[in-house]
Length: 124
Image (tube, rainbow, N blue to C red; front, side, top):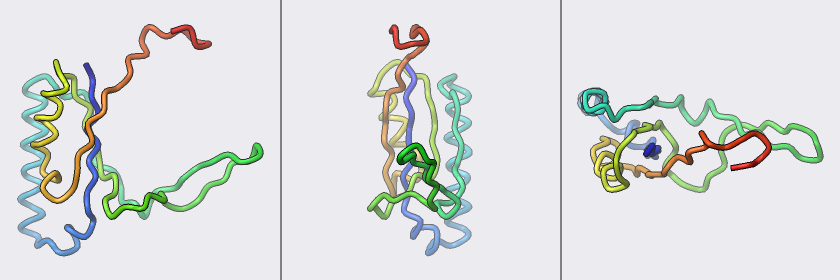
């Protein structure tokens, strides 16, 4: 089953971390990603640009409204994700606990719905 591991991180960590600390963490990310690739569990994963580059789109009365940034009331921001294909929720949680940002942020584990058998028009 596919799971999305959503990485929520505190940007304040990076503003106070030394270059050596950031370099160490990036090395941990590269090693973690390589372990996922080597195990065959990696489906996809990418870091996201900073929250200051985000826009939010809504439609009100038929008109598209675009505003700057997300409006979550939290100090953590979505910083990236992995999609993994694993046998169980337990394994997905085990992998989430290995993501470096979990030490100063959070990782949400969410199953991805399998829509491969769904027909257009809503016949699932």
